[in-house]
Image (tube, rainbow, N blue to C red; front, side, top):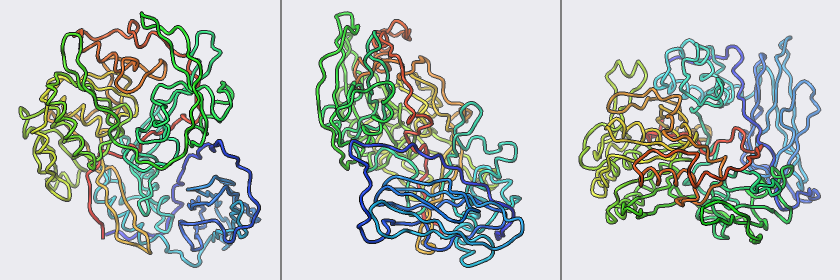
Length: 597
């Protein structure tokens, strides 16, 4: 086992600073009357030690209110000088010390309304607590060296074993990338640039971004587009695309496709929509909505008068399954629709129940809505594949898992099979996969709705079923292109913290050993829903659903330009908050792991 030493500068951890959000409530800072600092859950209470070569310090905490950061030590640079209430990050740039002189800097964090300042100390050079992250970094190094999918160069990397654990982890990823982008498939790329690594590490199970199936706080409106919604381009609306079914917004009558023209008494315009969007996501707002008026030909002829509703801020569980329906077409076909947001094993029982209902209805076709499904548990993906494929494919390979060269040389490879409860997970047996055979609908063709957020275990459904020669027809946009997955492992407590290490460790291949979809799956019918008027899940006013229904009923692949649901394009307006935004963690496919010693 290689022991880590402090070598050259560790790679910097680059994190995007989120645009500050505004709410309908006043942000006036209260007077400093509250005892304490207002800081909780600091990432460390020790002096942070940085090598003479310099580094970037990342200090995380929770703030009870808005905060500012200052320092009188000019040799360090504050990359973050203020933040909002809640989970926060302070970033400090520490330059190289050319004369190798020890020095100490103090950064004061002042939380609005609190009397005392929280002081973050940074020492450059030899000093106390030099080994604060040494133990976890050693665990990370050993796990990555053994299991990372592209582990060959790791033993040759010069790494700083005393760096912050996040910095250290990313230095491994960057180090492997320096070998001619060897780990190209670890991350999503846009225009030749990787926007992020899929691999990640967290401390005390704190997440890095939202995921369906988790507890959320806010209005329940999770994602919007925006645009002019009348021919004269005088009416601007925020148009929710994701509204959680358990949220206050949904209960107030706001749904996917609602047209929100006023927030907090302020009319939405092209110049203020980003500010109002931030308020809308938080909640505690009064909003006005309008609806489209259609003629008999399905064309929009105008807008209704505004309706006012109040959207509060509540804590709710955002479910993995948003909608399930059965339709009967004019020709008598039974069509099932499922809007599935995340492959979460906690929802597999509900998934079985839904397909039991589909089976009782005698469905002939399935429209599977995976537009915002960024992945999740491989076992849940296998459950869904079994529910679709059925007994005719029992025990056939759904997912062939292949590992790095060293593990492969030892003969290690694993399989997930249709209807077979034996799995290569820690628990070895997963009964819902076998149980799914009793509720399967046994289809030869399915229709999948996609966007760039369709990733990993969602793409595994596409690839795995195609490997069985099931006809998977795609409508929407090119998928994310995540043909890899993770084995997530959690450490025993180290200095009071547990760490969850989740690197890319395997490729997903189908029964034909095809895995080359890192550029995503191209849709059979391409349509960008952001450019059109849209309706609620599973309605003909939703362009992708409508196109799927047309294809099913006519038996012919539809032409987008002549479709009823897409004959009213909107003049799209860019929302700054959506730029580079990840709707999901994109952290599946995940093989559930155990604990690292």
